[in-house]
Length: 226
Image (cartoon, rainbow, N blue to C red; front, side, top):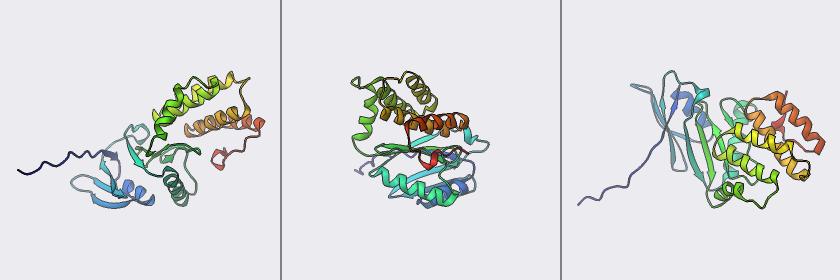
């Protein structure tokens, strides 16, 4: 009897232009392993034996694309460094808002989201227990109110892709942060500034940057607001 093969699941992400979609991922170090434009657009990119599939979709709104997938990697820091470097080489800067963009990944973080030229949110996650521990930190009651708010905001931002909820959580906590440590306030402000820039709320980002200076917070280059 012929042995039945294991099931395989292939997620197919939408795109307006298969050429543009594959070219973008090729810039990040992926190999184009298949492409066709007729009778419909379809293509595949691969890296380290793992593939992303794309299919053309007419009339799609890339700013309202909810498609996503997860990519588990063994060394998230190296992947993030590679992607940001290649994006900067191609675009002149690391995009934090708009399409495409890449989320800011803080030291010790276990995931980041890369939104490609078609608006697909591809979430890269570090393999191991640390990612689960970061999720569970929001439920730890042995923290100050601001520390817990930071953990909850990270859960909203990185795991639920809900930047508005993350921002609202930090705004509420920062208004009541009189008895919190400056270290925790600085961390909360840093995350909140990143959220404002990601949501293209530049006036809010500028106001937060001004507040951050009161805590002698050294801001990354990505937080520059023209």
